[in-house]
Length: 381
Ligand SMILES: [Mg+2]
Image (tube, rainbow, N blue to C red; front, side):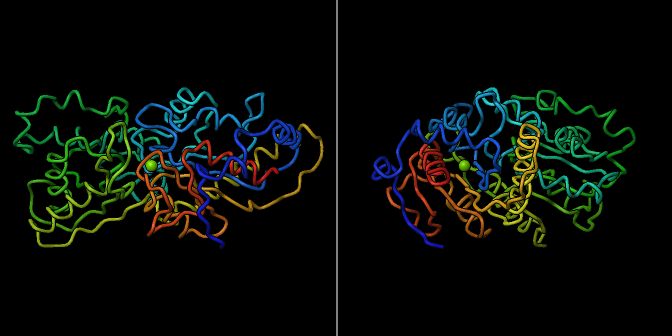
């Protein structure tokens, strides 16, 4: 693929135009009955939001992907390694923050692939780790016997020798949306082995979680008992760092994984076995492509109803990945290959003037709004 540094901040406005010119916008709205042949995947942290604040002109940029009546015009989704709450809840939050209607189908989080593991663990005791509502996320996917690590650890007195020094108590950290008696009516953590551990979102208490996970994993699922075979361990992502509200990057789930792995390997001598999901894993991009095709079909279906005719089937010719993290977003889109086209913004992890040296994007722009300008001008000249 032709690879070029298209520095929008320097050369864009004469070539690309910004914002969308009225003539282009008019032509675009006339295409309502046609099926779009491109889609867009947005990273969230450092592209759309910083913390809970929209950045890079994201609200007005996203509005261009909808018709005036608020229905979806261009298939797009959010492809984030973040998470900790069910996709439906995240969609509601994004809708409020960005002022557009986001459906649950348009939210792909780091832990979304966990739902593919339901059949393997459906009735087995599993542990969900992380901020937010990790157990609610897993039960939403169909796992029947799930405990958050907070709930699980609270059944073992003295499992965390430092708990008395912590200013927050287990009650304050309980997964408020999980209802133990409803989710798992029959379990005894002192007898039931943990059959799988899922790191759903960023660990809140690294020290306690590393300790309890080492206990679970080394004992074969029964802390304080004899050693046993390590249960499977899954991470929703492997980001070393990510851009949050603080000016410099924060340690992500990849950093927690490294810490757990180093401690486990030193203490127990056996290498930790685990599986990580999330970008840049190519399977995440394949899944996003499938969802994008579903969204395209629904847009086409709406058009068919309005048109009263038959809409042709077109494969998506291009899917744009707009991200701020070269090693995650850009690397992943490059590995995924056709039809992915990568766009790197300067609003998050990446702040360079030129392209990234190791994982160069197909296009570098200042903000997500610049990226959407480029896409709409290219696709609808
Ligand atoms: Mg990001």
